[in-house]
Length: 88
Image (cartoon, rainbow, N blue to C red; front, side, top):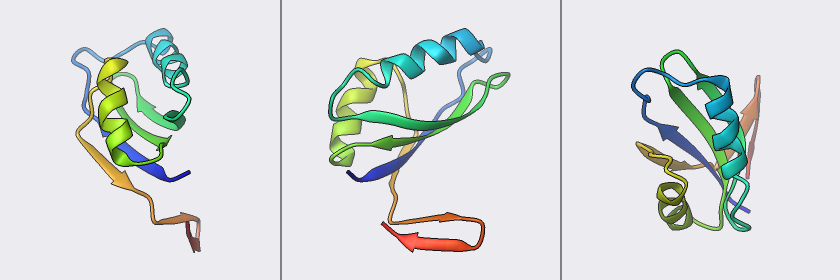
């Protein structure tokens, strides 16, 4: 399934770890759209997440349903770790 990087806007006042955990659970409820990995700054309420979805449109439809706003969605074409890159 394709992967997407989603940039989520800051949440005013930040967020608690418990709030982040509740959101993480909600990202697993749809059978076709799943949150895979999250990078968070709780004090600023900022998040960058990796999602799996059949297409970007599915994310555009699902994210508002779990009250998770987004600034941008980027389709992942190349993945890498350190100096190792590969097309996906």
